[in-house]
Image (cartoon, rainbow, N blue to C red):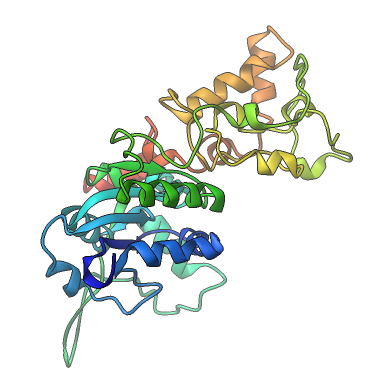
Length: 334
């Protein structure tokens, strides 16, 4: 394929840290296969791209779009709808697009609280108490900036998604495997998987990938990893009282964190069949506590220092909980 005959590829960065953009470059020379097989139609972080050029394309003209980041404001939502119309295949790329990600933890707070923290805390010099406004009139005219939404959403809560590729960010080996798959599909050597499935990841849990030894777990208390004087390099972290999210997290990362002596934090999202990540994890933690006394079990679970961050670090926006009361009241105009 050459020139304009090549299928089009796009990538967009919404509400997220940008790590997913870097992860694509981390596939090293494999990126040359993307260039060889695709025409880059829209990738603002890597090329001079204009939204108006995307708007001018026929609907469905972009074969593949990797959309990373969640939906936090009106611009994110507008781009999600635009790229959905223009793309034959839209992939939720990374934890934020798939589940809302770490930015979704702000759903526990109201928009006012988020702005107060950003514009009135010690790190910000803002004596006039100015907050961002969707419209602001100056002598040259009216300036417009994206409207901040009270509740953050995952990509598929706004538009239909064809495939999900989790990770914070997705691992380069997994991205490379997906690139190989798409290239083989273009060359007629393979078929695309059924729509709606998770690609670039496994169908089991991180625990199944982890090489640490697992025995009968008898936990009497949970501890912060930094408070453990010596971490056994071979024993399951959860058996050492370190809250590890491996039992509920989808495989595919190769259990990199537990292998390095750090607990899994759940960035690959819920394992296959898990409806709510936090609920599944609470069940897993409760099942390994060495007690049958409900009051003692409650006390031991209370020893987890940051329950919200532990159970919903990446998945709050996509969970059954979705948001805290302040955000919901704000979203309903109360």
